[in-house]
Image 1 (cartoon, rainbow, N blue to C red):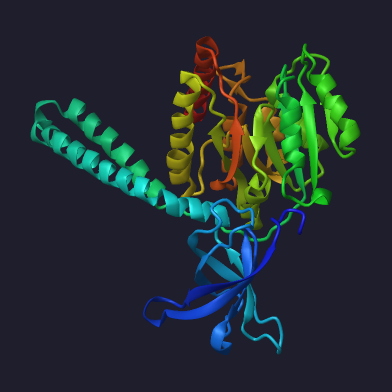
Image 2: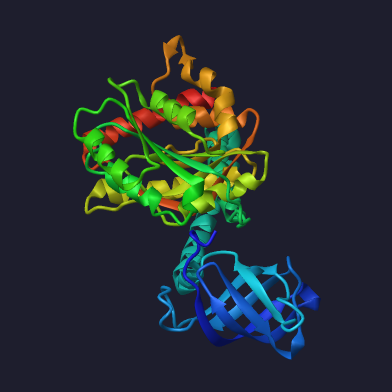
Length: 416
């Protein structure tokens, strides 16, 4: 377990703890004895004690020199008591697991002026839209179809935004299932090694994770790059197709070779954050969860396409997927970074591989299609904290082909 945790730092920092609810909320002085990005050991003054499972909010100044981004600044962070009193000699000492990473919380607090400005501007724009749409109501019966569509479309967008505001980050359950990371690649000699290295650099116990990479008939040096990593990582499993069979069959080959309870699919040009895999598998403590979509960020380069797509990716995940997640029905777990319960994938494997649409074999939209199959029996949610970065097209023609492929997939699977 310690393999995935961040380094702990000893200190003796003064703090204040709030616990309880509403009118019974109590404030007590405390001291932080040691801490990491994900939790702290605290000691309450006056002999007070907290029970395991009790929620609290800890306010303190993070000591300088800990290496945590934002150290030296005040921080107020929520958490849950994971470990009660350490023993008869230390009744007021307990362990606390933070709701989010310490550095993330500090960053959120620094960003609040910008967020407050964004909320104010969004409110102004919302009022302007309501004012404009009032004309649709006034002239509704002059053209019911046109004005009706305008009102429904505006309401749909507004509802998406409202649902996204209600989204809550899945809890950290301390869950450690066995994980198989499956990477599919075709002509990715520039990125494949870094992608695999990022998976092995994950803060997840090494004996519980394996990495499988499938070369889908590459004609460049992708296979050589993969073979070179076999000597460095003995547990690494490279697989090669003699000819290109398609991403769907490469994903299936990885799943069949996997020994883990959870399958984590990663694109060959995607780089998982150190705690990305750990966070991605936490919701699977619920047996009804069949898949979890991660939050994919664009590896922004100095070109218009990357900057444009970074906005589109963020809206797609933090608004669309966040809203769908409230109902457990995320419609697409992007192939770049998503996790599936292996048994759920194996149950639909044959139907997924044989999928046809209007009599034609389906050869695109593999991630959205697999999500649709899993949704028939299980819930699918989104984890905003499970993050990665990915490369996006740098040329317009490649960008248009990507968008065409995505829209064809969306049309097919929406009808399904």
